[in-house]
Structures are given as structure tokens and as C-alpha cells.
Length: 294
Image (tube, rainbow, N blue to C red; front, side, top):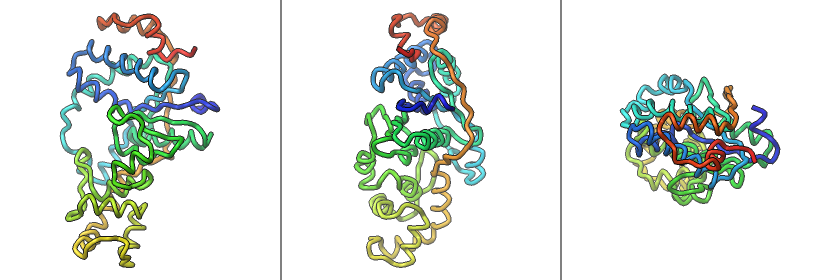
């Protein structure tokens, strides 16, 4: 993965499934519309996040097997966009084969694990590397580290540590895992602690980083916890659940990753677009979409 970590080079990491799912929801299964919209998104990313940067597109591995083994209910709810995502993802990957980028996968992990691995390796190689993660997934907020690692969202734009604290009522990015272990996540079918409201969960996640620290504080009966006797009892009863949810949410950043590198091929990209009846991009726009180095 040496090309990813060139000195002084900014890295933009895309959560591929997240990006494709968002576009699929708009284009509703129309191949030509999806391809055109996906390319427009690439053009916008180049204009917004800058050209001459390392693009890293991360795809799913087989990590759901591990999380399913730990918790059989993990992501068990049917997602309406799943069939569309499965149909449109190959089209997105066909476009990316003509774009100067790196396609990364962690065979033993999910996409968010692979993103964590890339971020960790980049900062280890050069602690001042600027990394931008493109995703709407709040699980990735745990990777935010001002000013080097931020998340780019379509709705909020740049998400920094200050933005995370604002949205989570004071919870720092580093404590997002504990916060989510307490409040749960309906989209991943992760249960919350019964009887614990979000306000109290935020106060606890502001003070503590891990379940171990939280329960150590509970046992010491610290007044600063600001929990009622009933809430304390509920937390103690849910101790095993909280530890499991934390383990599921916490990203693994030391997995082996597989990288495929593609070159900018604007002419091949034009031919691919033409096969899908997409003709509305100029030569200069195709150069930008293919992330041509200038």
C-alpha cells in the first residue's frame, strides 16, 4: 500500500457501499441514471475535496461472519436498499476501474474495519497525514482526530470533533463506541440499555471511554455519574450486553488488507459511459472524474 502514504499527500477514503446505497436510493434501479449520477458524484468530490489526492475506495470483506457469530441479531433486519445496492455495486466498480484510485478490502473485516486499518497505517506512516472519510456512517466518527482525520457527509459537510460533541451532547469522538453500546442502533439491530435515556447515556459517555471504566465507576458509586438507583441497576443487569455491543461497534484497525490500484483512463471511461447511453460529460470533466494527475 506504499502509494497510499506518500509524504504530504492527502488521502480521501470512500465508504463504497454507503456512497452507492445513497445514489441507488435516488436512481431506483435505472442503470444509466445510476452511472451518470455516480460520475457526477465523482466530479463533485474532485471539486469539493481537491484533485491530486489519493482516492481509496473501500469495499466489504467477510467480517459480518464474525459479528454474526458474536451476535446473531446483527444487521438481521431487512434493508429495503439491499437488493438495489447489490445490483448497482458492480456498475460503480466498473467505473472505478477507469479512475486513478486504490480499491481496498479487509478479507476478515467489514468495510468500516478496512477504513480503520487504512487510517491507522496512514497516521503511523506520517502522523500529519490529512485523511478525509466520505460516509454517512456514524460508526466511523470514532476515527475522527482533529485536525488530521475528519468525516465528510452530504448533510453536514465536514464532521470534526467539535461537530461530534455538538450532535452527541458533549460526547467526544473517542467515546462514540461506548455511547453507541449504551443507546443501541436500530439500523444494525443493536439493542439499547433498557431504562436508560439518551441524555444519561451521553453524560456517561462524556466521562468514560470503555465499559471497563464505566462499570468501575459504577461500583465505586461516584456521584459524578448522575444516574438514579434504578438506572444503575439496569446498567449492572445489562453489563454483558454493553460489553458485547461495544465489541461489535469498536473497529478493528490491525487487519490485513488487500489493495488493487487503478490508473486514470478517461478514454476507456468515455466508452463505458457510452455503452450505458451517458453522453453528458465533456473531455475535461472526464479527466476530473477519472482523477487524472495534473
